[in-house]
Image 1 (cartoon, rainbow, N blue to C red):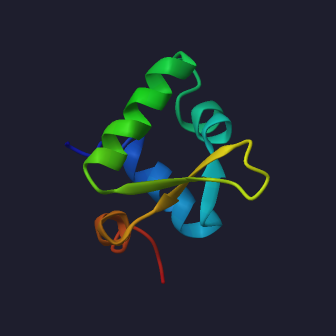
Image 2 (cartoon, helix red, strand yellow):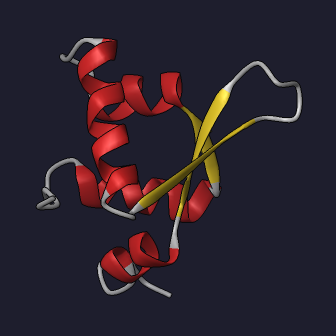
Length: 81
């Protein structure tokens, strides 16, 4: 998976700051003109490539995404510390 500077790096940076985010938030913020299926497919690709992890929130109703070590390594030099 090749990370895009226009969307993927900012998405990973967003997760670095906020730690977790539901699919709907990421889709609305980083895929505004794409279908929710397309956004979810990209998130799944990033997860399979090891940049994202996913879990179900404590209520058991929402799927949330988080940054992995590999995802952090991909963005650590793009943002101030």
